[in-house]
Length: 164
Image 1 (cartoon, rainbow, N blue to C red):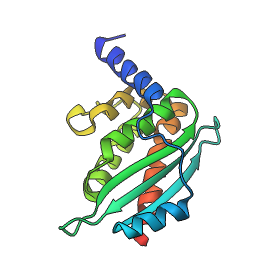
Image 2: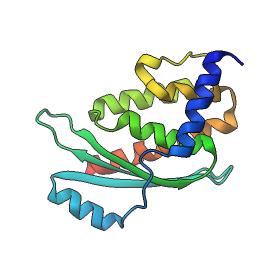
Image 3: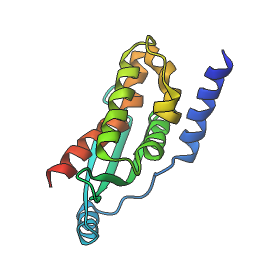
Image 4: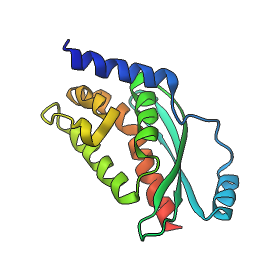
């Protein structure tokens, strides 16, 4: 195993243990009411990987900025599953929180393209940050679903939040 692969493995294991952004979620209706009072739109998505049983519920809050593009003002999640899915949710939280919706979507698309490449696309750490650690996962189709699960939840919650 190369030094870079060892580093990526360490990043995944550390995030699986630390679980940044993982919280006990309050009822969605309460979060939506609090968000509306603060000028934010809040939505969540619950996703399950039926292959292995991993599941994640991710809640996104969008704050309307001065420009036309809203920002991801907060991301929180809860879930159970393998180290890959839990680390992916943790890294997603750190990576996307605070970004404009346009930037968050671009990063999501880049992450998805990397994971679908089956190892043919080298992850760009400048763009993906710690999410580049999942580049090796792309060679294992069964694990790609684990890594993508929180990102799919984010995308669904984002679409829902934008529609309100």
